[in-house]
Image 1: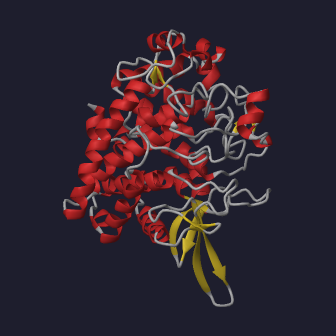
Image 2 (image 1 turned 60 degrees about the vertical axis):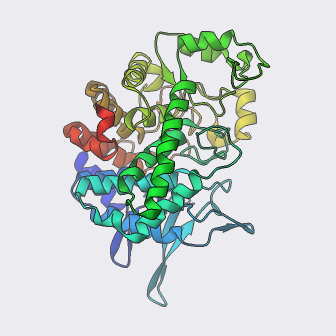
Image 3 (image 1 turned 90 degrees about the vertical axis):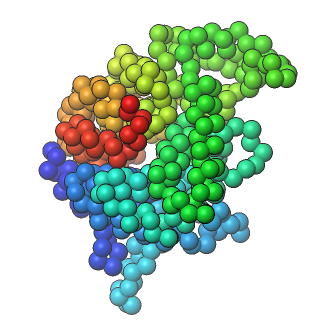
Length: 453
């Protein structure tokens, strides 16, 4: 199975002027291509990690340099210019057989479904640059003037001062892995974790010159505030739930206990049933005063395997996954969120999007790509047996089902109704999970050393 996965991953490689520069999203030729024949920054991350772990860093280096070149392009959508530091969501290689030439075409959101521009692409780019540096020991790429400038442009966007009173990053709906409008806006925890990790990586990669020092000072201040805010207000346990239940509203001044005017009635019955247990979990709050999906596992795993969670919180998240195995893992790892939105809530939040009906796609679907993040979290917390169990479940079906993008159903029993086959990040996520279990030192590519102490 591993050999066939590597063969499929290599078939997905995209070449530009003779050099591999990324992997396409899916090799499935049975459906309309849409943008699945493009290289997505987000989707390439597990592919990049697989190649780095296999001692093939050149592909990752090429990808970093090519996307950096695209960052400098003018980004205009309906007469409106995006920020200079925005990284593309995806790109494709356009072949001109008449002129015998190749050009890169980037999508910054102007062609995406829902016209959503990615916030996470820039963060993943910085994280990959650090992963490449850590894996190879080669600092020359990160020290290139253009790479230093690329990082500063990304940081300028996310560190800019504005009206927001929180250190978290305010995001538009659909700017993350859940890249359709689904009410995932405000401060989704996945973006906050990536933001945190990108800032940590930038601290290690930025040069100590005049321009670099200015950003380093801003990063240190933001990290301090962001860490306090996330661990104080995004962590929900039984005590916190009881406090919220008894909150008074309309409190004023610095003595307010209910700082964000949370309405106790906004906590759904499902939320109470799920949280009223001896576990802690990182709650994905769209806004500090709202409760959206009770649990977004993508955010949990980002926080756990990357940097955000404390050791105690990391352990609690793994306890939660293990104790709620049937609900969160079921017959195919791993739910992207739990529980699914249904009926009236689904109609309002998704705009009646038929792809996101209950227990499908982003609305409670199961995504095999999350295997690599689950494994990273397991390795970090010393619970490899959880990852082994999840991988064994996936191995029973993934190859036989031709590597689907996602699975439908409450237990992940069915291949997603509109899922692409030969989905590259499902393939790469499996390979990364296997290699990380075999050699836990690979965790160092996506976790900073002091976070493991």
